[in-house]
Image (tube, rainbow, N blue to C red; front, side, top):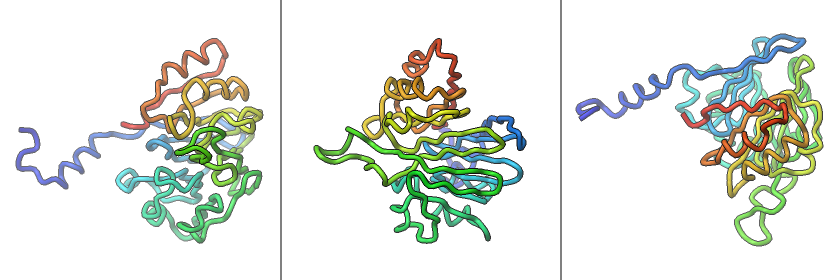
Length: 241
C-alpha cells in the first residue's frame, strides 16, 4: 500500500512538495510589473517593486515558503479570511495590516479602513469599498455579511487598477465601479452569490480581466458562458489545488 511505513509528517511534506510552484500572472504598469499569485480560496499574494502584499492569508502550511508581508490586507473576520497564526508568521518589523474595524478584536494593531477610506502604501493607492449581503443570510432578518462590516479593496499601482471583492453579493457599489483593469470576484452559495449574479455585476462594471475566486463548488462554466461575447477576459485558476 502506498505510504506504508512512511511517517505521517513525511507524507505531508511530500504532498506539499508535489504541489510544485504556484502559477502567477504579471500585469504591466507605468511603475513596473505587478505579479499576482493565487494561494487558496480567498488568499492571494501581490508583488511589485520588491514589496509583498498578502491578502486574507489563511492556512499555515500554504505560507511556509512564501515571503513575509510588507502589507497585509484583510477583508473580513471569518476564518477563511483572518488567520491570526498566519498573520503572526508573515509579519516582520515594519509590516502594516489594513483591516475593517471588526477585525480589531483579533488584530488590535491593525490600521482601520472603513468603506470609502483611502490610504497609500509605498507606491500603491488603496481604497476600501463596500462588501456585503443584501438578501442572503443564516436566518430571516440576518445577513451573512452586514453592510459596513467588511471591505473590498481597489488597489492602484502605476495607473493599473485591481479590485478584490471580499465577501459580497452583486451590490450597487460594485456595479458602479469604473476603470478596473483586473478584478477578483467571489462567488459561492449560500454566503455570497451564484456565478450568474457575479457575471451580471461584471457586465455592469466591465473590468478588462476577471478572475473568479472564493468560488468553492461553484459552476465556473456558467460564469464563463454568461460573459461570452462581452470582450471581458475570464481567467480561471485552480484555487483549490
